Image (cartoon, rainbow, N blue to C red; front, side, top):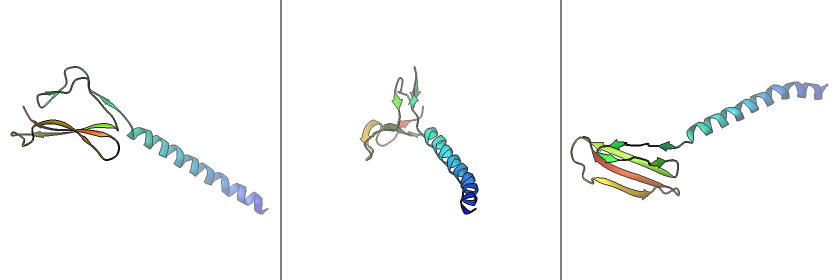
Length: 92
């Protein structure tokens, strides 16, 4: 009878584990993505048309009301094998 009790307890536990795995898979795929900017995209007066950003090529854009100290964009390493485009731009 002990093996029967273990089988009855094991089914809900297996269902719970399956639900956790499915939920983790759904959340994991939702965080990965890619942003593709189309035609005539301008941010702070700079042209960002036809650029693609994902987990390896990211962008960090800072917009200032006045003139920024380091105006323009540069590519930098992010320390995890990717690159980050850092832009300091003035609002129009």
